[in-house]
Image (cartoon, rainbow, N blue to C red; front, side, top):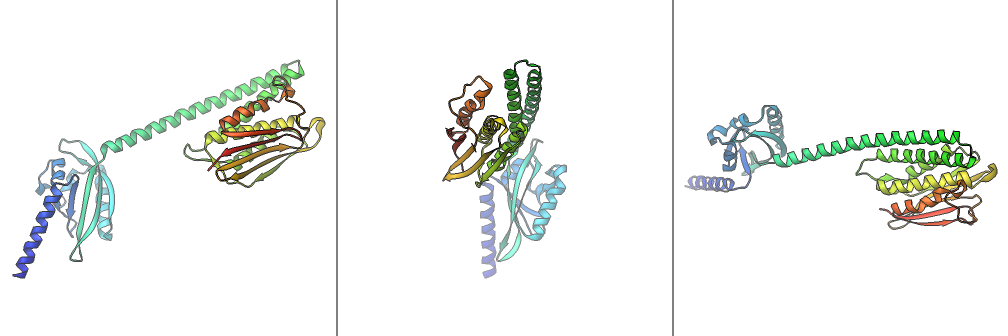
Length: 341
C-alpha cells in the first residue's frame, strides 16, 4: 500500500512538473542518467515543429546545425561526466527551416539524494547575437577608418614639417627663418604626441607620468640645446582619459621647448624641472619650471621672441579642464591643477 502511495505521489509530481514546464516562457529539456533526453516542454516542440517521440533520446541532435553538432555533444558529455553545470550556444533548426542561435544552460539534479540526470533551459538569442555582431563589425570599421585617418594626418603633418623646414632654409630674414623652424618643430612634436595617444585603446586611460616624461625628454632632444638638463619629480600614479592627457602632454611640449629656446640665452646652462603629484583627493598637479631669465614682461605673440607657445598654453589648459598659474618672476613656473581619479 505504501509503495502504491509513493508511486502515485511520484506520478503526481511528474505531471505537475510537465504542466509547469509546458507553460514556462523558455524551452526546457531533461536528460536521464543515460544522457538520453526523456522530456521536452511544449515551447521546445513548437519551436522545432517536431513530435515529442522524435526528440526523445538523441533525436533532438538531428535539429542541431552540422557545424555545431560535435561541439555541442562534446560539451554536454563532459559536463555530464563531471556532473557540473554548463552553458553553451548552438544553432537549432526552427520549424520553418531557419537556423536560430540558442543559449542552452544545463545543470545536474538529484532525486532522493541521488544523481538523476540533467535539466536545462534554452532561449533564442539570435537577434541579440546579430545585434552584437553588427556592433562589433561597426567598431572594426570605425577603427579601420580611424587608422586610415590617423595615417593620412600623420603623413600630412610630416609633409608640413618638411615644407616649413624647406622654407626656413630659403628665408633671407633670420627672424622669419626662426619662426618657420619653430613651427616645424611644433608640428613634429605634436604629431609624436598624437601618434602615441592613438595607440591607447579607446576604453583605457593614459598613465600620465610616463607619457609626460617621454614628451619632455623628446622635446628637449629635438630642440638640441646643450647644457640644459631635465629633472623629474614624478610621484603620482595618475591615469587620465586620452583627450585630457593629450592636452597636458602638448602643454609640456610647449613649456619645455620654450624654456630650452628662450630661458637660457647665450648658451648658459640651466635646468628644466617636471613634477607631477596628487595635490588632494581627485586633484592632480603638474608643474613645469625652469631656472632661466624669466619673463620681464608679457611677450608679444607675433615675434620669435614672443614665445607663441605661452599664448597657446591657456587654450590647451581649457581643453585639459585644468587651471593654469604662470609665474615668470624667477625663471618660468607653470602650475596646472586638474581633476583626476
